[in-house]
Image 1 (cartoon, rainbow, N blue to C red):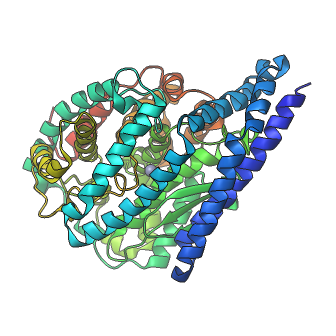
Image 2 (cartoon, protein in one colour; image 1 turned 180 degrees about the horizontal axis):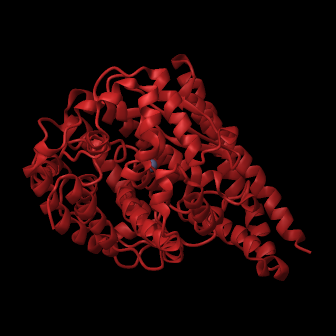
Image 3 (cartoon, rainbow, N blue to C red; image 1 turned 180 degrees about the vertical axis):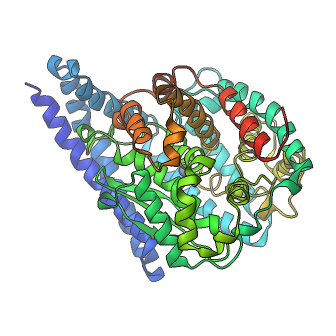
Length: 501
Ligand code: ZN
């Protein structure tokens, strides 16, 4: 019984082991590797990626997939069927791109990234422009290989948020933009009502780290199955369901840099630590989509850790760790960590303005793919949109259209998932509050286990078993809209900035 399934699973397990070993080397490259090892490490990573890819796309894998799918007792078992179906889905996708094309893409992306680093350092868009054109040409070709029905963007978005369509994103974003731009204007008109002076000072790195780890543990992050290290850019990675690691960065002069980046990555990590062991070492055993993943990081970072209720519990711990905060009234601190200020840099943006940064990128990607925006006109278009949405114009391209790594690495169609994550987080949270009416009261007592249990039950455990759009409906009760998010922003920031009504 299920013999073919067992053979398939054994093969998927081996491929997964190679992938996770690759991830260990990737993690180590960012954390502890001496810089002199860069070349040898990239060769090692290349070799392991090639081995894993060859094992996966081999005829032998297809044979095992077909044999397992033909087994009735396997396909009647929902979890086993999920393992077969997701592996088949990945196999089909992997076969849509010819291997020479994949190699060309890897080569061009890598050269483009080097050109981008140089262009950003010198703040000269023209050094990057030819590579940006190459990357968009490659993206167009990839979309043709993947195939699409309505819009070329759909084929690219589908890599990161399977099933989501650009027309749906356009609709959702239009709603969000119409409501966010006036809200930002109203906040800016009363910007003197919130100051974040109390977050600037001298905060010992070790003290910050100890506090962040203590809070992460209280949220439910299991350090016996994870750890935290330092990198230039924070991230979360996993080598199994029982080894999910996060990284952070420190700024001894600014309190919120480390604290909230840790809580963001903890949100990602809680998702991976919560996947069912039934999916361990298979392609089903990870988060469902980038948007759903981001919904978890944003939920813990913003809805939990930037809420008034959670700080009722955490503030005494903060004051004990960093006594300078004893001089800061609770309300001043709460407002400071929620300060809204239009800025040029996406990764530093607050909850209200963040999505406007994403819309700029999404609209420009659409226009470039449709041929309505020429590569040479990118800086001008970028600056015009920033003026339009955020009331700011970048003084140079380094803090303008050259700020993100995505376009240099060929990640076109990726940006919307950040905003989708924000929207999903609130829509899901509203649903959870219906199921657990005293949820935020629990936060005041430092109780987060019911929230985590809900997420484990409705989202985390399933891994990739359900399609993202189905899972959003299952977990939130309806299809995704911007409405809950807009209501949340108006209520929270209307209160903080005293906007009335
Ligand atoms: Zn994230």
